[in-house]
Image 1 (cartoon, one colour):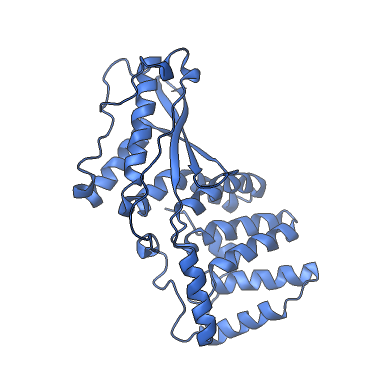
Image 2 (cartoon, helix red, strand yellow):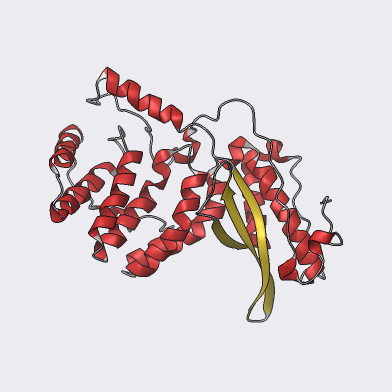
Length: 316
């Protein structure tokens, strides 16, 4: 793929770690970016107030007004901040550090993940399988048979991969796809939930703290998508005897589940919040009332606790 910034340019001279990449401004797509159910179609069939909701007409109007305020698309910039050569046994490969930054305001939660070229290749194959015609003009960095570990080749590929992510993100269907979101978040979230299952709550919390901000940015159009990770964070904080922080995270999760009583996390989260509120000396009557109403509308023979539900995530 041809690039406007060649390794021989001023931006790529000197040692590899000094290769600075300039951020390009992206064109904002026309028209409103409305919430898309595609990302959640396998997670939850309903993503709005249910037909048996007790919300009044005014409450429904206020709910949808707040939902519309979330429809403004979050713009993200992708940067390949650095690269390093890693050795595993007899093989050597390059790990590229991908930095994701939200535009429009100061972003204190810059997300950073590491991916290798083969990870990008798997993403490309998955996206072509689903969005082939839409990606005809999105060039992918060609595979090098030799010299791919040289500083010049790595610097050039950093630019090409940065451009590849930028072009993918410009396609609305792609940036909202499960494949794109999973590429940037699934390895870290899967490791975090694995640590949760193993009872390694401190390590799980550390991983969730790094992965969750990026996951929330990528799924801003689907408020409930980040609920499992938020609930896992609550479980970790609670079991680490940090109930006040756990309750605050739970409030964030409940906000995302507002008027979504059919969501599988709704009742278990309310139950956990009632117990936390009671232990913290907070008023839990309203939470208990919502839980009672939910159980009356959707009785179940066997309800999972929040922890039992969380440990079932990312098993496959």
